[in-house]
Image (cartoon, rainbow, N blue to C red; front, side, top):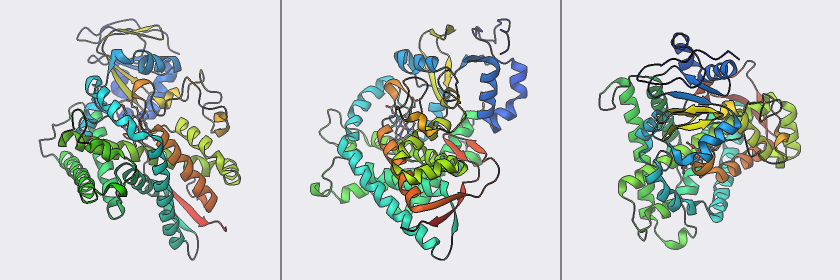
Length: 444
Ligand code: HEM
């Protein structure tokens, strides 16, 4: 660890309260920060420790990577923080003021309203859509491998499967024909979000730059998907067709104390499309990567598919799809004995916390068995923590485990890449050029 740098002000009266890189060194690293942010964060953490202040004048910006520090920010001091950060402001260009980006006042009643949509029956309904999605995948792969083994992009397969399950379980619709278009629109829109977050001078969306036009087209495509979801419900209003109240029923409920406006309904549907499928797909893609590069673990899973939950939870540790969580401080906070002043940006990176030896033994090793005793209280936050914990956590864990168990029991999956798979750290973690694997059917 470097020794403490002499305190000085970065400008705009920003005090220096923690150690961190100097301005010149950060400027020289700009290319690295944009091309390989995970590596940069890891290097910064290993040089300066669990609470780092970046040489940024406004807002004062901190990276918190200890298990206790993460808990302090996300759980204990939740009421002293806000989601008004660059990350969430940019995301709201796509999701509007939906549950994920809404700030405390708007968020609280909305969470109370939407939580019942994730009741036991709804989780059971997800199981039905998981099975249907897997049956379709089996049929597609069987056709592809009728003569011999085939190479498929498992990242693309997981994206389509997760989108079908999300739209089926939450909104009762079949997106069969449009699946590629909607996943592509989601990815383009989210890439736009990240590009804007990384560019200190993003040009407002109303100006027709090529990047802005691409992003607007993608948002329009997502809006079209939202319209299709609403029209499909209008045309299928027979109550006995949907005995279980799904997310759409809750959003459209006319008996709500304050029924939602059209815009609010649109924002929630877009939020759940975006938050509910790319995250799960990313987690599954990296789970397959870990399994094919650790064949003993893959064999153990094939022999005992009930291990799938351990594998999924451990994959989320090493490749947390939501690799950064940001908050704005509303008061001065003390985190790991460091003062983080009011109005600072705090970055908590599950990628780093999950690699912190204070919480994990051999943190860089893929060891699903470490979850035999359940997830630890501290140091594991793939779904966030505290009041803003992911609302889809149980659905995602069920999807993840069932999909891994099913595919491992019915298919041979082999790695075809020989070198490391580069990571595109976008809104979630994605392989830069997909994840091709060789598949062949296992004899029943
Ligand atoms: C492996 C899959 C998933 C991961 C890794 C994940 C991760 C996260 C994380 C880290 C947060 C907290 C963000 C913060 O504190 O700032 C979050 C919130 C959220 N997630 Fe997930 N998520 C996953 C799946 C899902 C699914 C399946 C859905 C919907 C069906 C969903 C919907 C949401 C929503 C709406 C929020 C905002 C909750 C609130 O603030 O009240 N997520 N997710």
